[in-house]
Length: 216
Figure (cartoon, rainbow, N blue to C red):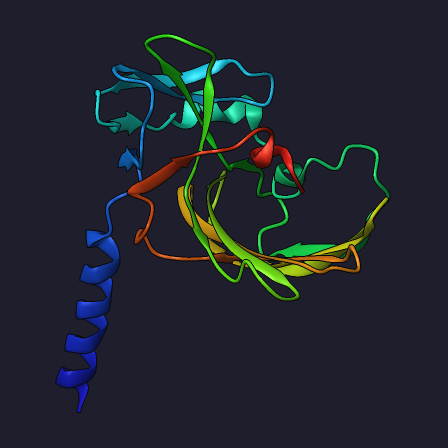
């Protein structure tokens, strides 16, 4: 019996080692309006971290910032920062399996067309646009300083109603794929569920209308 067990363990080890780190995004912007231009990763102060060309039909291959660039941007509350809640008194807790882990969440890319203002790009799937709640799945990228599982829930008071954010993440060191399942109720209540996912869907991007990317 030992030989099959050892073979299974070896197969799992080889599979884990064969997983390449996430170092770039290859995608296309649907209905890209801007002609040739550039697409960038920005930090929270809108400083460019990495940038690449975007062709006239919206295709790009964007290198992601490496560890040296990300290190000064990582924060213990980097997972919450993507919901733009400065000064809001949230209750609840997030429980990383590694208490020393620090994070950065990238919810949108910045695109500069050949002419006109900069645009925000999102990777998302529209869900139920009618009825209650209105649902939407929005993809994000999360950088982790070290491997960590993150569980927990936060509830934050907003003027229109409470926002509840639940986390179920299994993060490796470096960049990770994630998705936020968004549900907006007619009452003003908002629910967000953030979980780890595979790379499927991240090749498709759309231009965000207005300040959509800034909404909690």
